[in-house]
Image (cartoon, rainbow, N blue to C red; front, top):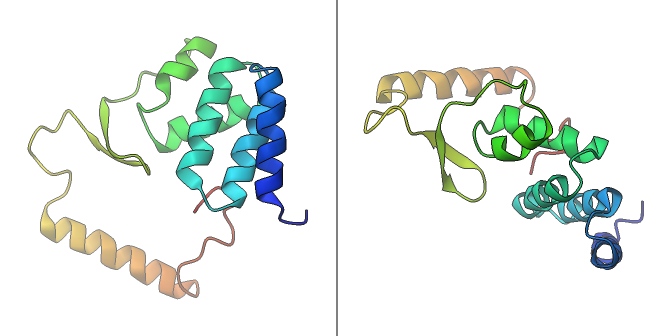
Length: 142
C-alpha cells in the first residue's frame, strides 16, 4: 500500500515470466498498471491474463465486467469460459482507450445532434446535483 506500482509491476511481470498461466501474477500486473494511471494497459493485461488463466476468479470477473461495459470487445475470451452468455451486438473499436461504435448502424449516428445535446445536458445536470464529476467512487475508472 505504499503506491510502489512500478515495483509491483516489475515483480508481477517476473512471476508471470516464470509461469505465464499464473492468474494471480497476471491480475497483479493489471492492478499495478491501473495504479500508475495506465487504464488501457491494465485492461489489456487483464485480457491477456484471462486468456492464459480463464478460471482465475478475479480475471474472469474483470472480463465479465469489461464485456458488460464494452460489448463485443472481450466476448471471444468469455465465450471460451462459458457459452451461456448472450451474444453481443457487433461493435468496432474506434480508439484503443475504449471508444467503440456499433457496426449495425452503418453511416447513421446513434443519436442525432439534438438528442446528443439533450443527453449531455442531462448528464451534466445529474453530475452537478451530486457535486460535480468524480471518479472517487470507481476504482476501475481512469
